[in-house]
Image (cartoon, rainbow, N blue to C red; front, side, top):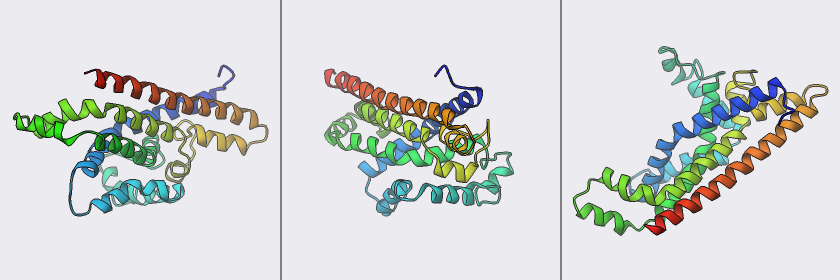
Length: 230
């Protein structure tokens, strides 16, 4: 990593920033969506499940185009946000939005699996003692699903680090603003003599992805042991 040039470091820093913001911003909604799919019965549940997992089955370019239509300056939502000075298209914040959308299904799935493994009788017992639903979730459910929350967050972070198709369609490939590691690799491969820089970024990308997966496993195991010890 010591051989990285200024442009490469810029792409690494931006990728970490975009992925971190994408993961943290989508986590509350991810927990809510997972809880709804795992615990609630309501009309439209199948539709919600489909919408959550849609980014996994759609081509990333299509997802990016839909984001552009929705959050672009002339989009239904983007035009309203622009009146308040919030612009997402062709900005790093838009890259974070695209990364969050692409990583969201992985996050929700991991948290949902963790929720489905929790015995509902434990939550029911807490409610019989007079605890409110939010308090039951905070004191009983959340500690039990923390391994799933951690795993889902890190998987979403890793997915965000590698996102390319939706990002480049929605926010383009602007150096210093939206050029993340995948976009930088693509740009370097289009330049004569850029293979070395692209190769260095590939190594960084693989190292970050493997590190994220390793950290996910370690944290999940430690939290599982702690919960079991309680």
